[in-house]
Length: 186
Image (cartoon, rainbow, N blue to C red; front, side):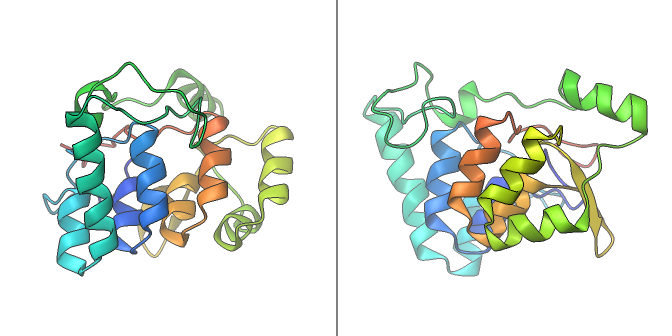
C-alpha cells in the first residue's frame, strides 16, 4: 500500500536508512519504480538522504537481477535458499489502484481497516510476539492508521521505517501487500 503522501514500505525504509529492510522488501518483490506524491522513487529518496548503504542495497539488487539471480520471494523469505521465477522487482510486482479483496472486504464492512495505537507501538518497538498475537486474533496485516495528517499508513510501512526486519518478515508472511497504491500514487 502507499500512504496518502505516496510512501510505500520500501520508500520508508530507504528514507530512514534501513538497508537490511530495503534488501528484505526487494527480495519480497517491492517495486522500485513506484513514485511518491513528489515524484520520487525509493532509490532516489535513499540517494537524496545520503543513505549510502540503502543505495548500495538497490545497486546489489539490480546486479542480482541482471545476473539472473533473483532473490527469495516473500513466501520463501530471506535465507530460504529458493529463488523466485520473476525478473526485476519492478517488472513482476503488482501495482494497482485498488486494494486486495481481503482489504476491500474489511473496508466495506467497517469503512476502513484500522489498527490500534497499541499495535502500532508494538510494531515500532519490534515486539514480534505482540504483533503475532494480534494477527492470530484476527488482525489484518494491511490494517491502516493515520498519523500527523497522513492517512493510509500500514504496519509494514511502520516496521520498515523503524528498521524492524523481523516484523517486516512477519507481516509479509501474513499477507501484507507492498506495492498497492492509493489515489495519490502514479
